[in-house]
Length: 264
Image (cartoon, rainbow, N blue to C red; front, side):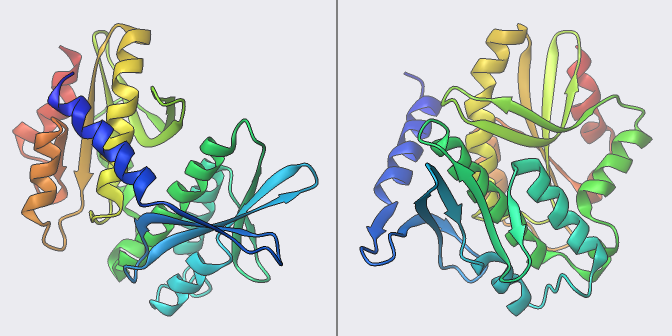
């Protein structure tokens, strides 16, 4: 077993050991405390309950409440609200306007995938709190889309792929060449919440995609460095053999080649 595979297995173990499940016998709700952190560095909690033969999964409104408290108001920013709508659409999550609850329904067979989808949506929504006024006017993923268009590249937006765990992951963009494939994540900000998610997702789909397509698969993180990017995050990408591009350096030949050399 390779060192990378050992690291991935360690991540699985970490997720399992740090997930706490508690049942409220009165209400019937089950609280699932995850090791992922919200914008206030508290654990992200999900709530599950059997309902009409299915399982209702909810965040109890906490995600959007935290967003409002952080000053990232949805009501005052049409762009931010549109970005939220796109995230929810990507992951099949519903939004109850009255109490700002995010929820979806699952069954026993697809519960792991649905739980993962809700967590993925919450992590991406939390990133809205980091958007500067400049980036609210032009959401970063749209900037990256414009950059790919500028480079005259053919790509697939909101690319979904199933990994070896059976879970489906969404990437912002995918570029397919004859012998290679590139999956891209646009980071409006990179932090301890979204970086492990990207690395886990890319590692999980890599082997499956390579077996299905016969192509070499590469992961690329395009990072908004308007604010300083911590060196340890870039080192984590290097360790996992994922490529990265700082947005301020997107026009230097070395970074353009990270997109174009995939044609080799």
